[in-house]
Length: 161
Image 1 (cartoon, helix red, strand yellow):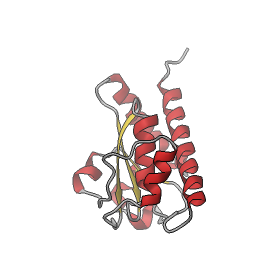
Image 2 (cartoon, rainbow, N blue to C red):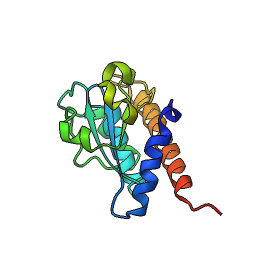
Image 3 (tube, one colour):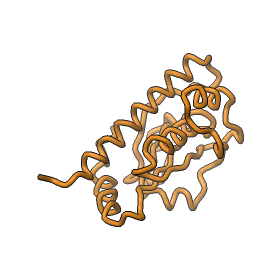
């Protein structure tokens, strides 16, 4: 599904690469901003900070990042400072060039039609309430997806020969 609208935001990313002060702005979204999207935010902040600025939010924020989310990140050497559960704020949505939707709801039902062009659906299992092994598996899934996204952006950023 990532390829559905990739051309638009990849083109935007390449334009921004000409202006070295501008990075692609990515908003990671899940249901409660308690498990998946904070994981993605932390992973991206560490592993792809050269490519994009990121934040996370929830369709219906729980108000707390799950303890197991924080433990999983820390166990894997990822930062947890500054992670907190929050709803999608108007400014964060407007500023986002790319929204990674991990809510489990397709973009067509979760977001306004006029914004579909900047939303990518990632089918990532919700680990909420699960054991540490499930959280670790979800962490690895998200990290792999972010690595793949970053690799594609880095590849497209290279000049043609």
